[in-house]
Length: 54
Image (cartoon, rainbow, N blue to C red):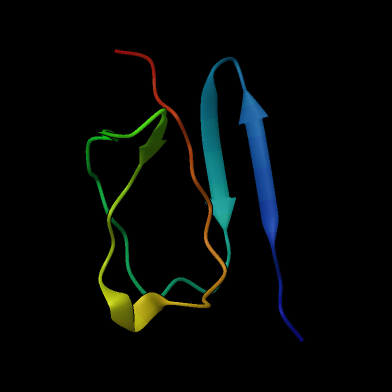
């Protein structure tokens, strides 16, 4: 059984899940879109994307 919990309170986030890895990267331009590159070995994996305030 997988246990997932996301709590957002006063602009802070708490995430409880089975995590394989964690990335902090900058979103870059891709034509008329934006992208975030991750290694190909994570293709097909479930992911969260959280946009942070600067």
